[in-house]
Image (cartoon, rainbow, N blue to C red):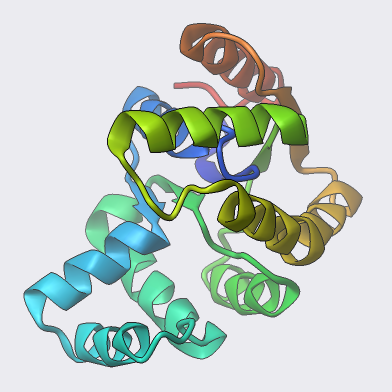
Length: 195
């Protein structure tokens, strides 16, 4: 059986957060979302958390070095020894290099990269619906388009790296939560990664 050291990638509105939690539960591994890890460190008042809080309060993005340090710290915890699912990291080629170095040093490379493929209009429609349901001011059409453009320019290129390694699995992200989840589980199973 192949260990489940997974990364889930998809544009905003693709359902990757929801699917990531479901996949992690199915495999009994932690879902490691950089956003959640940042918030936990800030809440716990750790040194890393204080650095992150100061950066966020200044309106800046957390630099790659700090993001990578936080992810390395999280993946070194006992519950991630048998596998993990990364969501939101790596976001760019620099972070891919940081993650590769860390995992290769442990002899534990990623075993699959789940790419949730969703057409741009579908992402925009889902995010607009979420904004209406949750009253999220940051999900207006302009900010949605900007975030999707950043995804397309910075995150999409990392998929080329994982495709060239033969570990990327493209999943049609359109359908019910259960349909998409079943596609993911079937694709991982076909690669010998079973829950």
